[in-house]
Length: 210
Length: 161
Image 1 (cartoon, chains in turn purple, blue):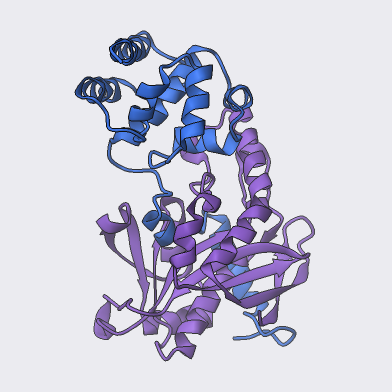
Image 2 (tube, one colour):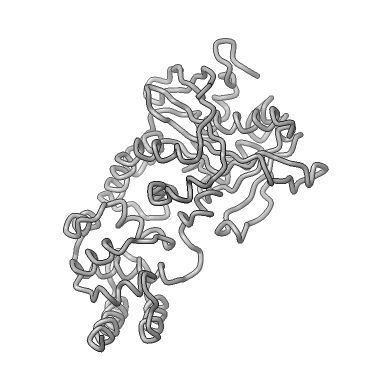
């Protein structure tokens, strides 16, 4: 895998630490990441259960178990990116570039990068109810930034589409400046978001919904 | 837009974005998870009934999720998945182990879990159960009645073979 050097911020010290943003993961590599994340997911579930935290506040990806989907993952044609720090996968993103087209604005019908999967390691989750502050921040933002870069590299002018989990909707709308384009019945009613070429430029220059 | 020290986004941009990250509970994108059935379903279905049945039967026995996982020798993550994720697809061993610990007829529980074709009586009882049950911390009298009625049908149809 190739990659670039980046920095992410430690939540405990506030310091920026070196990390790598790697290219070249395949969908099935998610099984390796899952193995690394599984024990922590289980710990989070136990802490939530013991603390009696209402389920609406549980991370909506808590029960994702990719190992059970291994045969399907082998068939997926995605390219992936991961953030590695302290020799651990801190976050992963899988994207697709074929057969996904913009629904938004003047670029309607033109190809875009579709973010099929984006997730951060469970030790980076912030769950105040069980005193979890998260180890590192900026991982999701960095991965999304990479999706926009990939879109530029592919000649898609920064166009990106994705389906957000309900708990993530405001991040993509307000943080990334994407436009919500309605719930998608083919994706279990997740809200579909798109970043136009103009929004991509604004996002890269200023960040947020500026 | 890139940092002098790295090839990634610059610090000022990252700090601004981190504020948005912190204001949300998650930053997950889930298209692939939706395709692979890893998200909770929004409609009632057989798996919803199965998860609810397991949750109620567990609570009736005053077992925590951890205790049930331990007694059934099933991964804790699998029990959480079954109870939380209406699209969970438990395997035969897991369903059998749960049936044993929760005193439910295993063959009928396979039907409720979607691992065997359900008989009409089971489907009908499952629908009634789904309509009457809501997830709360303690079983209400009505929920207890709903659970007992459903289990009665499972046991009776089990006796018929």
